[in-house]
Image 1: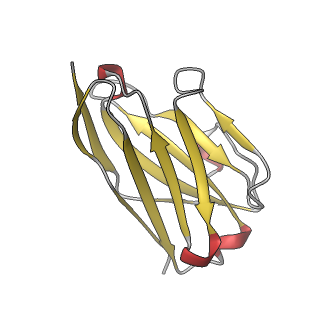
Image 2: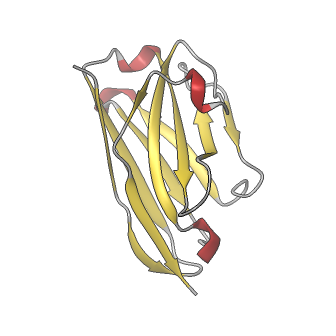
Length: 124
């Protein structure tokens, strides 16, 4: 069965960096667009970053553009989210998601599979 497992979350201070990882199993990873979403307490899940299936196209939310970078390693079936200059408002549970043959979609509804999430907490 398909599994997406995130890791790398934690408690950091403002301006610190973290790198999240999401390992996929049970899928042909190279045919899947990958996305990162986050959900803060009391808020809707929101798009953070996405990369299309070939890795040639990326998209970012305005709130993270210039600070976060999405990348993928097909050999390791892993997608990463490098997060720099973290802010307290980045505090959320971060989820990775997979969409077969997709683009770097901003709409959560297009994604077929989701991980369980990893908590990121940024203190001021």
